[in-house]
Image 1: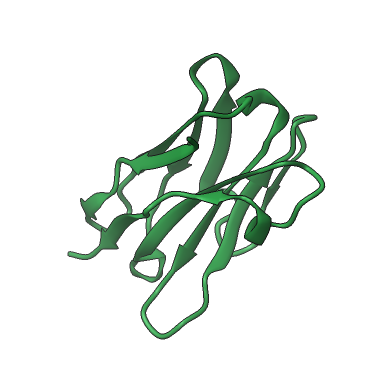
Image 2 (image 1 turned 30 degrees about the vertical axis):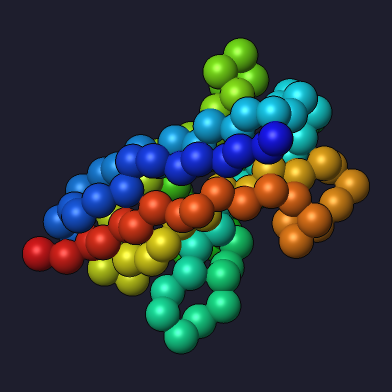
Length: 119
């Protein structure tokens, strides 16, 4: 059974940092692409960053220079380091793990972790 579990969310002040973690089990993690997405109330889930198995990382312009995605295949874990957080980064953040030829909708999702940026 495949499980994807996010952690690391919380409340942080503007300008602060958080690191999200996502652990995937029940799959051959190293041959799956990974991604972080987020959703705010009333909006569709949007892409934050993805990493293909070859190491190519794509980061959305809105978070470029502030967020970094990394993965540790030995730990079946993908991270999202978020620095200089802004109130508009407030959202539920989701991890997605998929085979490289599939879109995110064909992959596995975690339950999400809430990030709130507020003073």
